[in-house]
Image 1: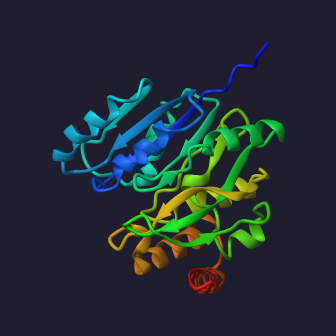
Image 2: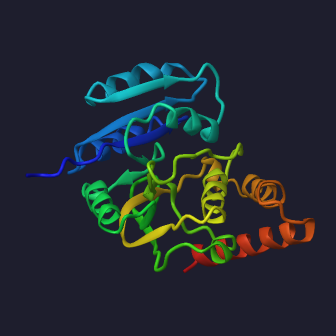
Length: 252
């Protein structure tokens, strides 16, 4: 007798990514793992894209479209989406990233085998033309002391076991919101397990918030000083360390 495959809720938020969203959604439809639902949050003030999005979503059997009245940002949009997730696992993907077709199958099998609460994988960094620039490889499970110095966990590589981690709330920040959640999990004693192989492509774009260095620095300080409750000196020092490690990763 075959064991029923668990339902995976896939959370995706949309803001000004019309150029890439079709490829992202196609990579989800092409997954070898089919027992999933799509929770899509439209978080764009430019409602002209909505008709295009609705056309793309018609190809999905199980989906939920949430339309924000105004742009509220990825953190609050994901938090809203999570409330609608019916799956026992939650996967995240940004609206310009791409998954390899065996991503969900490989990762969910790993998590079931190892009774994992949280898993993340290596990934390739691509440009706007989908050319691979370099790889970000993960070789060990995440530990608080190391992760706080260099966030190597890509959002689009993450799957969370909702039965083991029931409280999933992203901190309210424009960037670094995923980093803040991972640190929160580690502080609570959850294990964040790594998978060495690359199963996702992370798209680097010139206009993305994640490319805004100043915004990332400000949010990093907010993360350490407010959410992680570090003192002023430690917070400034941690921002410097994080920035230096980011530059090192970029050129390796």
